[in-house]
Amino acid sequence: SSNDCSGMLFCDEFNGTVLDTSKWNVINDSGIEVYGGWVSLPNASSIAAQNGFGSSCADKRVDLRTSAYGSSVFLGNMGLSAGNATGILSCNGEDALVDISGAENGFSLYKSGGLLSLLVNGQVTSIPCSENISYVQLTAGLNDKVDVDYVRVKCN
Image (cartoon, rainbow, N blue to C red):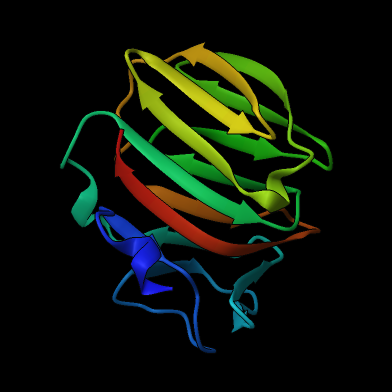
């Protein structure tokens, strides 16, 4: 519901059947579809959120719900690359393997106090990170697709 977006720097819940291009820039469209509350990005499709929220606060939290793997989420120069049940959290050359089973119930990537953290299924993994979250980009893997239900960004 739109109530879920109040107080957010950026929010999209993928209602209707068309990507909201006032919120997203399409970088590569290999058949992007919006249906039933999800955006489906197949075969290396990529979208990036419009960057109006980029400099609004140094520490941010990005909440997503995604139903498929083999994809990546980038927040500026840091992010999460996902396989089937394991992801790689990375920033400034630091990497950590993370268990991402349960991401279909929602997960949070957040930057706070010099750390980038991933919260999924009640488990937190953190790595040192001096980058600030400046944008959000969703990209499907070469032979996979990523389905995303919502993206919400707020100051942490």
